[in-house]
Image (cartoon, rainbow, N blue to C red):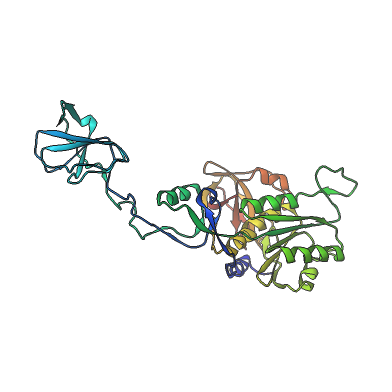
Length: 388
């Protein structure tokens, strides 16, 4: 079995092959930005008032000041401030030439076009040109674009951005026992959860998907479905049929389809039978049939590979929480990714019976990693939690 960290290295070696496409920024949240963006102008582009008040020269000893004009946000000042003069100014407005301080309006009194400072103003209250960002500086590094990033791009006057075109993901669910929701179950059958779950996880990464449905455990049928999917899609995800059973045809049909298997079987729990292969620039994952295994392997392996294909070396964010109860496991031969429920800063226990216990995932909001060889994590231990 391959250690999962070595599998991560293989995933991280995927070259970004996605084409770039120009995307209006109002539609770009959630898209992958594979290249940095540089500021097109200084931020702010001019020195502006941080407060409503009066713009004047801070070295001016005058007791009262002639008010030259009122400057609203969006106005261009028409007169320079000199000694003995000031301009009334609104928050966000351009500071007039000659002024280097703004006295807040509540520190002043004005009558008949004259202003007096009645309380000393300790601050300049000016946001200087380029104070936040100089023209030409990197404003966004490669990332998954968030709403706040869209705001930054808009503030630079950038109407669209080059984002990676997401891969089309083909999804195949294998298993003669599977029935789609909405149909009655016969003896020995179960409902297909993996197909729906994987499609949803793929959509969450902002990638389009094509679902090829449930394919029975038949070598010919699986081979036909795989051939169609690999000819149409950039990624193919197959769930089930990757172990060593008599009806586990997936490794053979992937190999027979001309793909190179880069790993099969990992020292990971859940998800030991996981398979990864390449055919040209396309990526293929054989995922376990147990639904918790499928979910976890998608989060820790498939999601990073989709993003790497789009040119982004992505690592999940983590936060720390403390175990409210000890975690004991029977063996430590594999790295385990265990779903957990976090409340505040504590990991609270809840029933979890392993890789077939799908409804446990709806209570989980994170995953923790337990290293090989560790059989017990003591109560009170601080651990890293990966949000899900």
